[in-house]
Length: 632
Image (cartoon, rainbow, N blue to C red; front, side, top):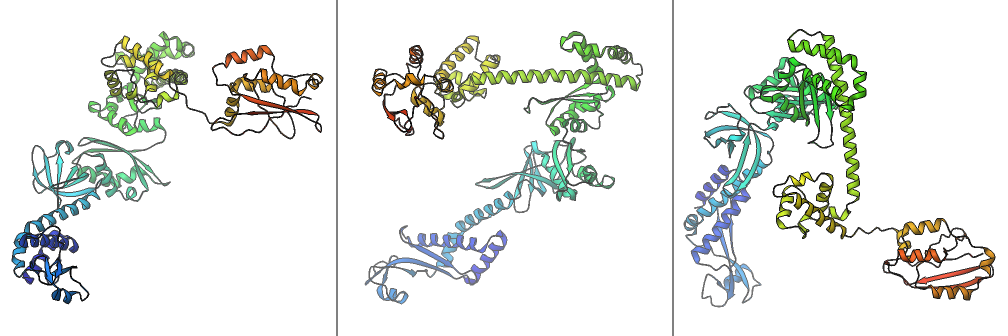
């Protein structure tokens, strides 16, 4: 039994390529289950199986109770036998005893076979998953095993990979046992093992092939900035050198094009354009449209990826080349640069420029400056319409006129954007900040249907909806199921909701002082900057008793009582006349009034009256020191 077990153990370990510990733990668990089944042991009884890999010796230890006279050998053991294992064991103790049955080898093999195989399969699947998850995003080699309408199955050695139809290059035909280099897109963990998805159309396949063929890219001397690819047809790659003196395009192409040709051969004839990246967007766009020649590039940057548009002017004979077959060249250039590209021929752009100079008042001043060029351009356009040859000087005049008008148009566009930004700032200033954090789903004033429509249009907060309604309500009106009356109803209800929202509290010591007196900060500041001047003789005749009497009469009034004290300099308290007090009370009758007490004492040394104020401190406020009033 030992030799058979050892041979089987070694065969399993070699075939599955698993660690010895993993196989031993799976076998021991299987033997424990087999023992429980053979002797009908309970789940409460602890069973431990031990396997010696070298000799194949199998031992099963069962936990049993120590008794004088065992009645059940499965759960009880005699004291004398237990003392041979542990000399200090006592009656009633639990001890693990070697309980390996005599014929356990053959029985265990039959019972544990399925468990062992299942554990080994699970361990092997986990091993495969860990192996290929680390290679995700890399190129792997596979052999075509089978193909069908759903996709191609590739053999990777220990595992299989699937290449769906949408990941196959158009026009490629696959044969059984054909070797392929594919890009590992994703590895999913399933109950049947790892599901590996590979691709031949992914743009990173081209990136990895370039890294393999071009040492400068692999070493970081040349960097791939962006890739635009239409698998099987054409690709554009923008590269840049990280060191001076390096030609990034030449490094990728190689001597006589050997490097790039090997990649083209691997991709079955796919054309690859290698372009040098440039930080200037206009230069980069003109290069991205190669092999077409570009006369001018005019950028309209709205600070958003969707609003970035480049108007490209090309000679008439280069228009079809710039656009490409079915718009392929322009489409790839747009993907490569991240700009929306609008391509116009020079003649078309010239016609539009002349119309703008003639019809639009905004170009009136420019039209006067370009009067002579306009006449020459009209003559040139007439010759082009008749198919007559055009001199290079005439082409230069066309280009100059078009560039001048386009620059003027861009200035107008920037002015419109600035006006829109200014309007947006005004609109946002009128919307409470809390409205932008108030979820639209919590707006009970709107029906569930309206909230659902707005949420589908990517409106998340009340502030966003109010902002859009103020800027352009037609966007909301264009949503399905919303009419003019509904828009007006939404605007009114959300305005009411926003008006009731509390403003965020400002934590400011100066505001806290002013709020304690019950007077607005702006009004208090004006009173402090212009204190009332009172005659000194008239102040001296005022006794402490008279001031206390005035204080008792005006105890419920609200005064601005803030003082700055620096280096024994006294600022007099504000004392306005009756009309000022009435106005102050009328403007602040809704504020909470605080009762204050005032005591006045004459200081003989200073020769001044010192007035002390005390009031109930509100929760969260500071304990302000007594204020001093100089009434000299």
